[in-house]
Length: 218
Length: 202
Image (cartoon, rainbow over all chains, first blue to last red; front, side, top):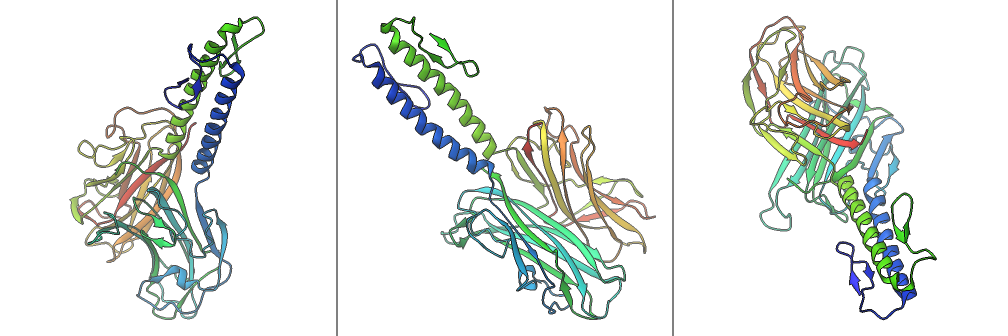
C-alpha cells in the first residue's frame, strides 16, 4: 500500500495482493473523510463569527457631562440582539466573549445617536471612543503586557441637540478570548459636553463586532 | 482508462485490462490528492486574507505641506500588521498598496490638531483610494481648541494586482484644512490609524 504525498490517501502498489474492490473502498473512505474535514473548514472560514445589537428604545437618563462612560451600560435595558453567530448569546456586542481562542483580526463598530433630555448646550462635543486592550504576550504569564488600539470620533452639536456619529476600530490580537474569559478587552465609550442637562442614547444605536480573518504574521 | 470531464479524475472502463487496476486506482488517488491539496490552499487564503494596519505609536508634530484645501498624508510610524506586503513605510509612510485585485474594506481614525485655529474653519480627514473607481470616505469637524477626532470606513474595488508596495497611492489617510488658514505644524496623536483588508475576488 502506498500513500499520496499530501493528503495521505491509500492506493495499491505492485506488491499488494490483488483486491481491487477493497483498494477502492479504502481510497473512497479516505477521500470521504477528507472531504468532510474540508467542508467543515470551509464553512468555518466563510461564516465569520459576528454579533450585532441595537437599542430598541431610549437609554437611561443618566449620562452626565464630561466623563467617559460605557456605551453598553448607557443603553441598559434597551439592547436587543440582531445577529449573534458566536454561539454565545450576549447583549454586549462589543465583547470578544464567544469568538474563540484563535488569533485573528477583528472589527468593532458603533453607530450612536444621542440627544439631551433637557437644555441643549449649543456647539458642544459628543465623543465616541473605541479601545481594544490587546495582550502583547501570553496573558497567563506575569507580567502580562498589553497595548492599546483606539479609534475616536468627535462631533459637535449644531444647536438642535440631536447628534448621530459612527466610529470603527480594526485590530489584531493573538489572544482574543478563552471561553468566557475575555483576554482582549474592548471598550466602547461615550462622553459629551452638554452641561445643560443629561444626554440619552436613542433607539437605533448600534454595536457590532465581527471576526475579519486569521492572523499569522504580526 | 478515462477521466472525469471537469476535474480530470481517472477511472477504469470496461476495456481496461484487469491487471491495470492498481495503476488506475493509483492515478485516481494522486489526482484527487492534488485537487484537495489545492483546495486546502484556497481555504488557507480564505482564512488568512490580505490585511494591513498602520498607526502612530507616538504623538508627533509634522510640518504640514500646503495650506488651504491642500491635503497632507499622515506619515505613519508603525506597521501594526501586514500579511501581504501591502506597506513599505521606509519608502512611503503614507500609503497602503492593494497587492491583490479584489474588493477591500478600508478605513481608519485620526486624532490631530493644527494650532491657532481660526474660528469657523474646518478640518477634514479623508481616507480615499486612487484606483479606477475612486472611493472616498471622510469626516469633517469644526475648528476649535479641541483635537479633531474622526473615523471613517468604506469598501472599494481594486481592478488589477499591484506590484510595488509603497510606490502607488492606493489608500491614503489625509488631513485637509478647509478653512481660510494656510499650512503649519500639524500634531498627530497616538492611536491614529489606517487599515484595509481583502474581502472577495472580482
